[in-house]
Image (tube, rainbow, N blue to C red; front, side, top):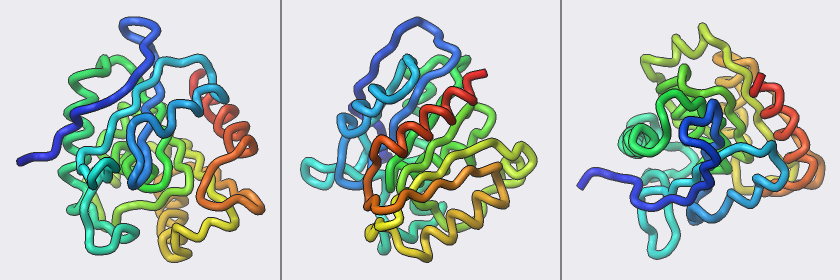
Length: 205
């Protein structure tokens, strides 16, 4: 059976908003995990889908032998399922501001890599990326979108190798702003959200 997004939560303020936040939760979480971050952000409509793979009350975006080293093939089906859901529920005229945490940060890069023209902002929180090349990567390198990548200096969940891979890719394909926060683990705090607020505000213009 093909993967599909079956549950989500949202707050829609108008029929066809110019921008909307799309939250992408991490491994083991669900659609309720990230929307509270809106209290730190500009007043925008938002959507938060649940990842399609049920782990028994917790959810994942993909299956892979090593969860920190998925390939673009490992995440292709979930990427397609996410785009199918977006096409069904979010007006095509609405530009997406992606906010992905951990595994959700990987999914944010996948959306950016596959349909960069639909994305007006990408926020990667404690994230990493899928390994391998996509045909659309060359388009992304041409567009060089501005991305913000935030991570804690004490994050023990994401390996140094995964961090280095993401950083190298971001510097090649995007205009990335990378922020590292002393003392922060695999999480976000007010320092992170202040920087995310400023980034999103700059992208709305």
